[in-house]
Length: 61
Image (cartoon, rainbow, N blue to C red; front, top):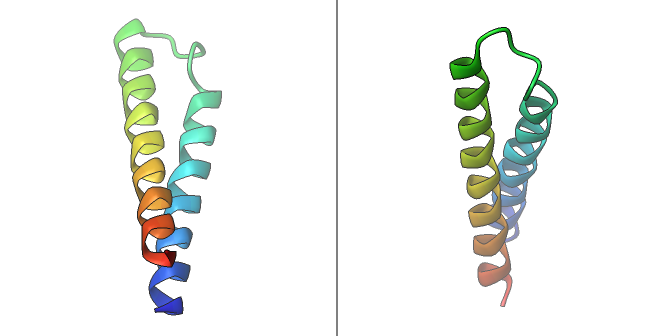
């Protein structure tokens, strides 16, 4: 069970860090459509990490 929790937290941390790195690029792109696309991808990654964290909390109960 501990391996499942560790793996889930690993996935959550990775997606959250990737979202933070993508967020650094928001507003710096030369094309508005690309900026909006990066922002949407970032929001998707934040949602994924939130789901992983919630799943890890559910499994530990």
